[in-house]
Image 1: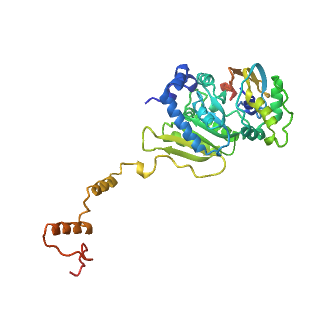
Image 2: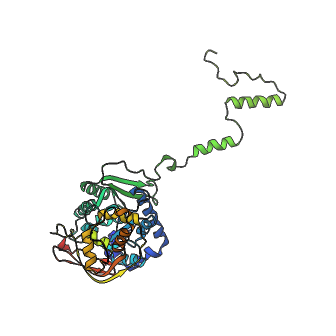
Image 3: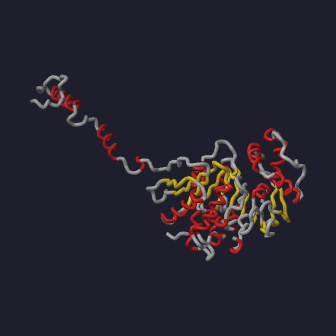
Length: 274
Length: 124
């Protein structure tokens, strides 16, 4: 599968045609909305409090609309002019800024209650110009993001790392900037539903939220339980049990055949001495 | 671009700029839009806003109206004050114009309401 970041730099890849998909293709919209909802869940914002959030790589403002629905105010950054025009046409409530995340976040210190980013961070791992150095750009981005977040704020990035080296590169740069946190991988056993979130925290080390779809029940088909159930449904007790022996005896008695009376010893194992 | 964004935007991403705040506004086209009033959000926002910068920004584009020069005490319960703050922060929209870096004089164009903060390679 070709990765868009290999084809062209973001400001060129997301042209008018590509931007149109983000308003018309219902599948893209559904996935973006789902991921945004999950990212907001991972942000763990205080309940019923309108927050001031930053959306990095806001594109056409799909994730911003989800923020609006939940009563938050947001500000979006994106590098693609066409995507921002689409956002403008959709009349999103948030304010939009054209900016390159690799050049830093152009904000004053401590003003955002949190940041989300949907499918944008992988673009930073590529060098599209000779002057680009992914390590330096990630470093600048994370240090400036750390500065503009308030204490105890979180930043959640959903992204598509190409390989484990990219994941490590991104995490180390984030830790160097002062963030705590790590990766939360939802549905790690599914090729399609697998989603990778980088959850970063500013206010001290706290346990990471648990990922979805990792409990044992969902890993395979639990056939043993189903078989037990089917057996019971047939109405016969398990072979060699006391119930099975008593049932056999009853049947013989009904047929008029000889059988020993039921006692407390019925169906018991013989002791070793016999 | 709304004045709340201007209040938070800096040009410190540029090489050699230390503070880069506040950016000067040269507005060509300014529009006002109605936005739902959310008193809780505004009162949470006010401690983060640089009020002097907000006043001078509103004055420079001619929309100061009757905005108080200072944040009044006990503003959480002062609905009148919150409404004025809401009007200036969220309802005034600069459609076309320029933002000017106070240290280097670099101009950032605002087109169609979106400020272009992209820097050239030699400015990073």
